[in-house]
Each structure stands twice: as structure tokens, then as C-alpha cells.
Amino acid sequence: MCRVIPFLFSVLCVAAVAVAHPPALPKSESPAVTRQQAVAAIRNAEQQLHRFRYIQYPRLVKQLDAAIRLAEAELAVSIDRVENYRPFRTFNQYSPAYFAEQTWRLRTLAAQQRLKELREERLDLSRYQRDVVAGLQSEINCGVALLKTLN
Image (cartoon, rainbow, N blue to C red; front, side, top):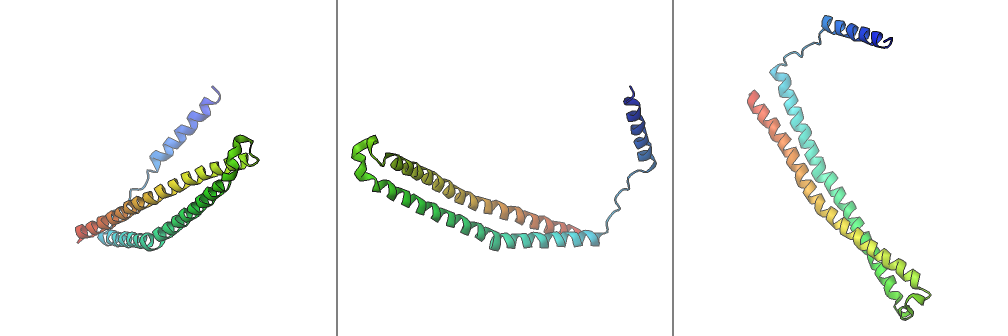
């Protein structure tokens, strides 16, 4: 009960202040201001589109292609290592290199999976580009439509 009374008192004080000082309503903006905002939004969207098309997307493609080349090289090395253990396979699990061969087989499998994931990510990147460009184009088109309605 002792905690409820101060809480109710504070709620009543906040309610009284809110009634005494209502929030200010936004003033109606002049057409010149909205026109400037629409032009600024169009320019911003065009800059983002340019930055994405010519800077960000090519950078992402280069990074992903480099990772794919590295994964392919790792896969080739691990396949070569597994093949180097071929003379020892006649001893089966009693071979002195049995565990080393198994380790390289697992690394080969991991490299194959990593390469598959990177190639799928590369395909997703082209879909991502299409979606981003479409979104930015729609922002530009909305701004242009707003400008036409203001004229």
C-alpha cells in the first residue's frame, strides 16, 4: 500500500502536466519545403544507387571470387595430399599414415562443402543486387511522382 500511493500520485502529476501542455502539432509545410525534400530524397537515392552499382557490389564480387579461388586451391591441395597416401592404403588401418590420411580426407570434405557454400553465396549476391537496385529505383520513382504532384 505504501508503494502504490506514490505511484498513483506520480501518474496523476504526469497526467496533469500532459493536459496543461499538450504536444505541439506539426505546422503545415510549404510546397517549397516538400519540393526540396523530394529533390533531396531523389538525389540521395541516386547517390546510393551509384555507390552500390559501381563501388559496393563490385567490391563484394571481388571478395567473394577471391574466397572461391582460395577454397578451390585448398580443395586441390587436400585432394593431392590424399592421393599422396595411396601407397600406404594396402595396410588399411594398420598403416603408419592412416590417421593423417583420414585427417586429409576430412579436410577435403570440408573444403568441398565450403566451396559449395561460397558458390551458392555468389548466386545469392546476384539476387541481392537485383533487389537492392529495384528498391532504390522505386525510391527514385516515388520521389519523381511526388515532384509531379507538387507541380
